[in-house]
Length: 310
Image 1 (cartoon, rainbow, N blue to C red):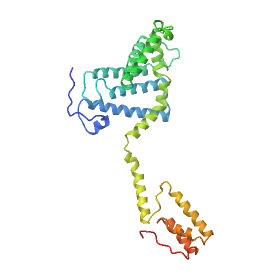
Image 2: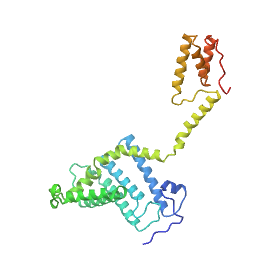
Image 3: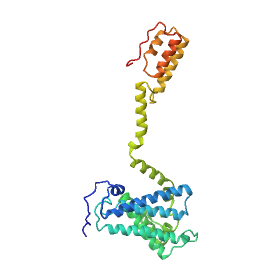
Image 4: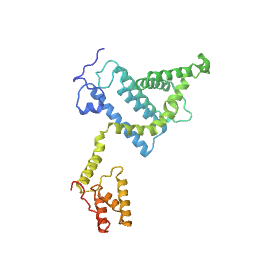
């Protein structure tokens, strides 16, 4: 099956879904871009709400997080394409199937949530089928987003747990039925919804959202107000109409001038000190020191040259 043609020219590499929509590009990728944006906003709102008002039931919260992340991973890392904005191919059918499994398993979990939270829960035939499909989708999403090595490692230990009596050395042991494995992975707060997902859905996701916000925000917008204010203070200080720019190290120079002023008041005969004060910068602080010294008759015998540029 050949690639589905796109109505417009190929987009630049690294284009995001927001860029696609802002540029008003048209093609089969537009619904995908809308879906990515809506799912991203829904994920942020879901976790902000859970953080402020408190999480829902543990199984429901973690399964919702996993479902949203799976769908986003499949859309952002499509099969057979570098990006969602590339022309669609027949591989997109596999992506649709994976999205259907992730979404359907979450709906199934919420509908039968009363059974999953029951301490005496036992898996049914449908639970095993849905859980197996979800495990396959998680492994495929891991292969796309992380690496094939991690996926193969997970598959190896799944097989080892299932058929441990057929393995050798330290991997040999009593086997665990697949039914029991899916019951633990999918129907309880273990496996897919264990401690790593609990930490990710409760704490780490907030740091990820915050870092993503910072990485996509124009740095010039963040620095421009302070940068303009610093330039204005510097310009006013040079023109003699404002305070010195509060740059690192300026407070040290002010302290030195104050100490020199105090020494001069205690020892009016120290003409060399008065000359050093007179040779300082054109700031108002320096001029006030000089005026105070003149009033105290400390520099009556020294000719004070005006600051340069005046």
